[in-house]
Length: 304
Image: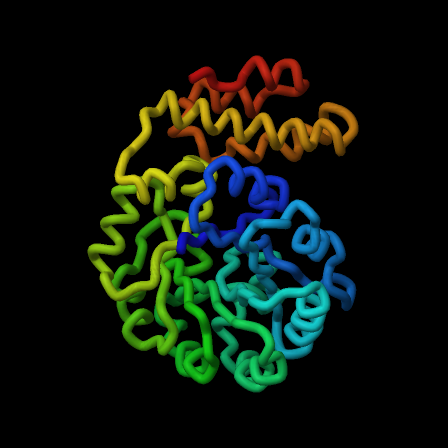
């Protein structure tokens, strides 16, 4: 099983559907987090999960919460929507969420998670998993969380071995990941800085007991990443870009039919390339970012 991490503004239902169709494989996708807004689960987030575009795609809803009350509301909604599995976000590093004790922010407040085992029993029809960081600022905060998680039957714990303060740069605390993998009753999955098939292999060689790897930015930059790992054959850059453009064309066609005007379409489609600078080249990447019309945007796209 390959695990594809959620990224807000990127891995929505349209991207998931077309990536699944174009690249296939034994992939499991996770929605960008569903949150509480104005006391209710945000409708836009739920629509992304309930969209007909998810038909035939192995997709799991992810929820972000500040405590028991928010979590119960969210779980009730995803159950009503037909979910059989749910992923708990304890890793979002962005201050807008962490300042509300959501995402990685909740790792500093284990008292807010004490009810988690009881809630998991209330929603016994769901399979639970967790995606987490090491802590907000302290890379050892996970130590106070793992004993709570061990009281729940979890499918896995996916760990990005950085603190929230680090965002997506700086040192990966590999020893901390090893510690979590050793102390967690649930299988561990490695998440973070996976960009090439060789890096997948290196992580699995280093931590042979783990359940796999999860990647988000890596699969956006190189959509064929898992396929190449499975076949053991790295594709030439020209072929990777040609296939990426085919995926992109499907997504652009969808938004061209469902949105109105260049500005709206570009706001949805430009993020497609956000992590692909190394793959497509700096000059092309900059031209895409600068394009203010669809005509200029299309002219800026890479050529295989």
